[in-house]
Image 1: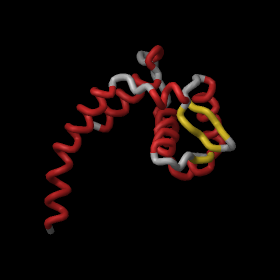
Image 2: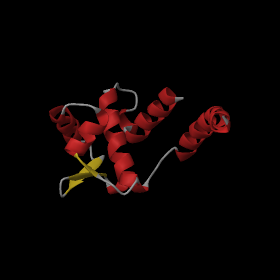
Image 3: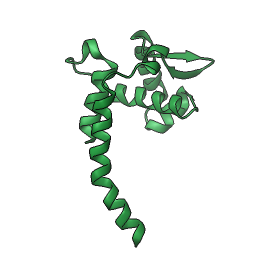
Length: 116
């Protein structure tokens, strides 16, 4: 399910380039930016690097690539999804289906653990 979700995310964020291969670490960086943005805690590059356990220079390079693609923006040192990406979530039903499958599998396991 993780792989399916990652592939769906890649196709969503890079729709015109969905068939090309992308660095999985690039996808991790944009996921970190997206989560920080969604949680109301946008991160600076060093926070993203620490979270992903990647060298800061490498993360900065990937952030620059994402900015060049118009997917994220840097405001006062913090990284956010580009407004258009944040407002439009194509294939939302695909994400919801993948997540519902995941919860159907994981939910009973979590319930069993909490009952112990």
